[in-house]
Image (tube, rainbow, N blue to C red):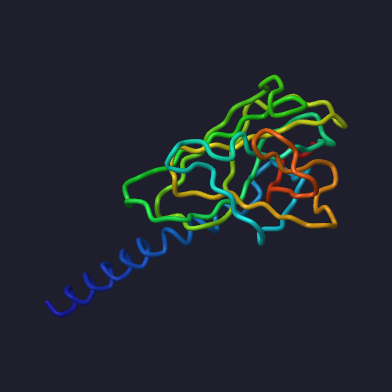
Length: 192
């Protein structure tokens, strides 16, 4: 009987460990390069300003996003860095929507993708995929915009006089914001 109780306690301890580690695994998982993808454009600085995607009145700084100039013709994913600024009930999931537009925040929509983020997530990279890939023309400017359906999230931007990403800039209220950039990565497919 003691052996049985000992085995049950080991199983319960393991289950508690796995359940408690879930938020950490959720954060770490979002920081890897998806299989078959390579990074095309990036601004990896994640320390800096945090701006609310929404507030109690709805969209506040929107449209908010980043302009970029691709070197490859197929966009298959985008990462953006977020930080939770207020608690959410554990059963609430936040829907983030990323829209890719041609040229500016008002440009033609080329692709839309969504990702769901659990309330247990605190901060880190989030990834959205675009499959089939969004077709781009290398050397032309594009914009991606980020929005969400909950008031708890801030998106991270980095203001830097050295212009961390000189091929584009942060979009706030639909307008370019000097040398500031969001923390972001764009992905293309690996060449075969």
